Image (cartoon, rainbow, N blue to C red; front, side, top):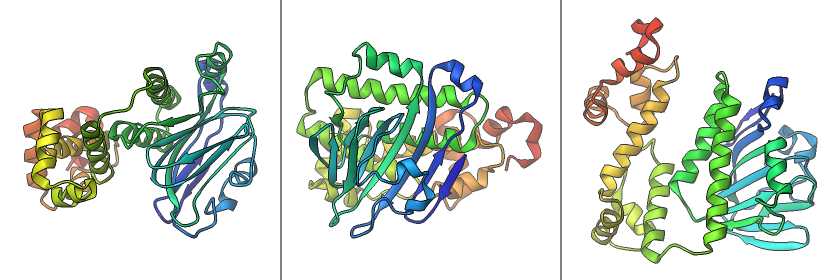
Length: 305
């Protein structure tokens, strides 16, 4: 397996395939996230990628599927002679055997998340017309749920716990389902829905830091009071309540990692006071984080704090 952890929030994995994986009919072969700054060669760290993946900007043909989610910046996507303008919230869908290229604009750069996959299950979806070469570009918008799915895929391929391929491919299927739903409905969210979706996305991307509602509302182009009103109307929660829920959910996932202590989780999520974090966690889940961790890893009780 090729793993890369570099600058600019870049990490990617190229995964080996076992006989057991092949039996599933669904195999994740690569996953990653790369931030390409403006005026930087694309892809950055070119030599860290396997040979077939390096020529993405010039043009290539892959034997696998890929779904690439752009969260910042702009660029272009060219496939089968069709050119698409990429912007934040776009998903590019690469099909095996189809010539394609994509790259960010020199002036903007971009941030991307991707998952690559193969297997009889996905091939059958293509043969049966469930997915189609005619629908390979999706304007999904900046959505916290999609960002969370891509992050979950990265966690799974990094940790590689038993049956991680099954969990990873179930997440990939969720992405495909969201893409197909958007395609078949053919609608776009209302202005206020877009405001809420972008706000959720911004909060998801900053879950490891403190929230600044004035900063977020400023990025959305509305006042803090109006932002609070719109968000609560659509979610029945204030932005702060939603942000705390994101942190608690993230904490639950981090506590699943055997080697991670409660103190480390607290600090990684921006809580300087571990005891405040523990009280908040218990208030939201009904159980202290140390107890949560002991239930998951009873063999390591002494390392749970």
